[in-house]
Image 1 (cartoon, protein in one colour):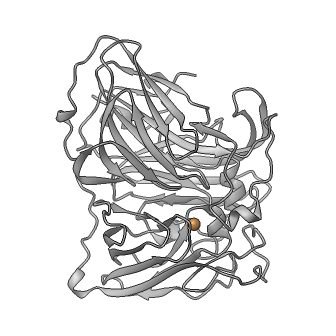
Image 2 (cartoon, rainbow, N blue to C red):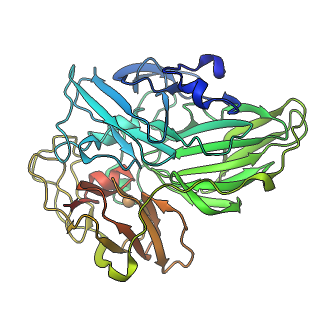
Image 3 (cartoon, rainbow, N blue to C red):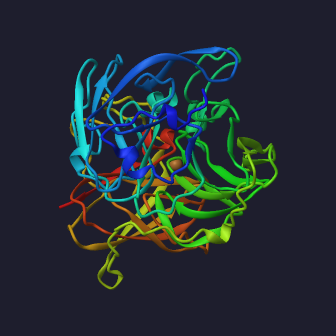
Length: 462
Ligand SMILES: [Cu+2]
């Protein structure tokens, strides 16, 4: 189905209030969040590989793919998670700095939601940008089977563009007949993770979208895959980077290539080709054979827009860390030789320990979780001195707080605030934050096999 403004489910006049000048929304089903909205986790069938029906796909609502939720910054959002799955689930709102009780981590922040039970989430997103939502229980299976959706927070002060396309990037572990195969291989979990076999954007293999010729198009890209690191490039068009991981970059830069990992997001403003029918292609160059992620076809007469019109997006209200008075918190990512977790995990154990933070592998989600990695004082600033003692890349994600990279042994660091840092093999990096959000905040690798085999911990802010 081609999705346009006609297909938008709108509520509460939000579309009328903020949609003016937005242009046609292309490429995805956007749900303007009625409040409260229902998110019904359910099992379904879907065609993922373009040919055969895949059974045991997981989604929310009527789908097939999870709804793209759109809200306005600061406005109240409420959702009732209704679980029709035969196992517990939760929802974590990735990148959103909200109350700890809404963070969706079983046992640490909420009870998990059993079959036929529900949980009410409610919060007002403080930051505008491209975010996403996913379960934090039995995560490898639930995300691997489909549960990951985009959560877009609009800033009424953002400039409007001629079109906007949101891309939910992920792979699927399917055989040649579209059937799910084992979600991971232990030997790969102990390395860079187990890769999918079918690569999709918005649950389609290399989907093609129409966009106004010569227009400026905002691409909201989210990597919701459990494993894959992308090296993005654009062919057939020029673009500017306006935001990374939901946060505006302080200076817009010409887009060349960028490496981002699971959990991360990228907002590009693409200047479409002038000639009708000409295409731009988003590609991943990190694989042995680079492949097209999605294509964009110029339609209509050229709007003759200019990328130089693109300015800096308004910043999010993230508190500046006080570097002169910040305490240093060392964090060491390493492999571990410790045996499999002894305790039964309540949210799915992979049955192995391969990884550790500060030499301690996470023992799985349990009613009696570990001690925090560190206890932080609310309002105080900290510098996380993180060292990667492994030969693999890890997208390290922190819940509930945004941080900024100060310096790295790799040289250049991104200038934006973020919730996820992609740390290279043997890299050491200093990440600064102000601990202004109380609660227990999980800190973990977003390669879910790494997360679930030990590379997880949490900070307690009181
Ligand atoms: Cu990792």
